[in-house]
Image 1 (cartoon, helix red, strand yellow):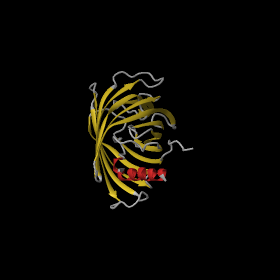
Image 2: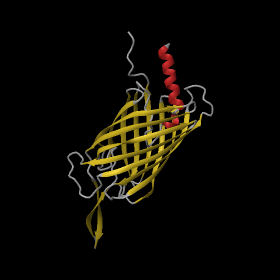
Image 3: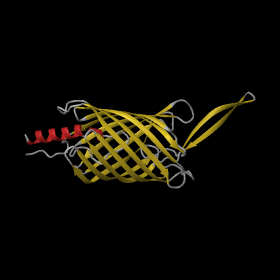
Image 4: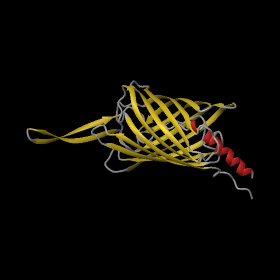
Amino acid sequence: MRYIILCLLILTGFSVHAQELYIMSDPASNVPAKSIGIRVTNKLMPRPYDNGYSYRVLPEVMFGINKNFMIRGMAYASNMFQRGMQLEGGNIYTKYRFLSVDDLHSHFRMAAFGKVAISSNPLTMQHTRQHIIDGTPHPITNIYSSNEIELDGNHSGFNAGIVATQLVHKLAVSGTVAYTNRWENMNVPGVPGISRHAANYSLSAGYLLLPRVYKDYKQPNFNVYVDILGTNALDGKGYYLDVVPGIQFIFNSISRLDLAYRVQAAGSMERFNTSSWLLRYEYNFLNALMKKEK
């Protein structure tokens, strides 16, 4: 009976605070304690040299060690830099919640996070096309580079920062500041001149539209989101500011489906992609890390 009550409390908390499950950023809250979560993110990104799209898949596994600490591992594969799908690398993300202020219909959280990533991708994208001169084809190769430090597939490096989240009734707002450092990719020659240091910041808001009245944890939830994501290169390589509207469905308080569109609103930074589509599915196994009583 004690475990049944505990499980119901965790499920209820997952549903009530669903508007904190941002699509493009992490809140200061963690995944449920003693849980294991799996999710698969799919991204479609326009190629810079034609009207086609590159596809990247990012499977993840998440562990809620306790209410204050979580760890997440991610792998990624794509056809972004070659014709076929290829395993590119992976990353490890950790987050520690160090402040919690709770009230009846609101709470405030702060957490510190860090990520370490490795990638085997080239640092430039090349595309060769045939150009006809006086009736004779001549190959012309265009080389594209990016000063955006992207630790979910493109680059190796590390990222660390602070996130604060405020929940008031059905609205949750979160802000993040972080520093990112790019390393050389595995077995890939370095490219001089591309950015190595960046400051990242984000502002995210989520609102619970449905259900209007909460009755039990089996009710589907419908949330709307908007994320504003920004980066400034600290070595003078430009900046960008992206806007990401999205929607989310939560089922039985243990699984979620996200859909979002990311587009650059302003910027001067050279990037491989200035827009993308995201589709994600997540499932959580609650109490999976709890010890069984003898």
